[in-house]
Length: 86
Image (cartoon, rainbow, N blue to C red):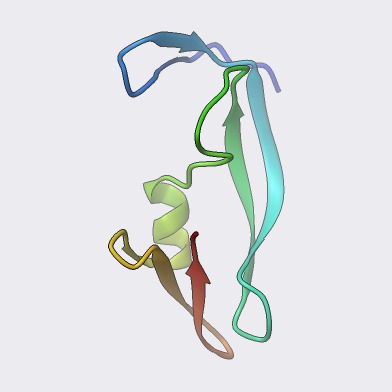
């Protein structure tokens, strides 16, 4: 979907969004996983990150994030799911 929201990169540069897309994502694997529909704003710029999950998504997942351990924990019907970064 088209979107007219300007975004500001970490260095303060203004970037025009290419659009908005809703994607089904699955976080983690095995029985302790969660699948959600998430809105992503698409930009046409090289970045270090493939995707950034913001507070609304993290709140919907009831996630707890640890930047020190590069991990995120979230409750599921089958126990606590853990997603680890690298």
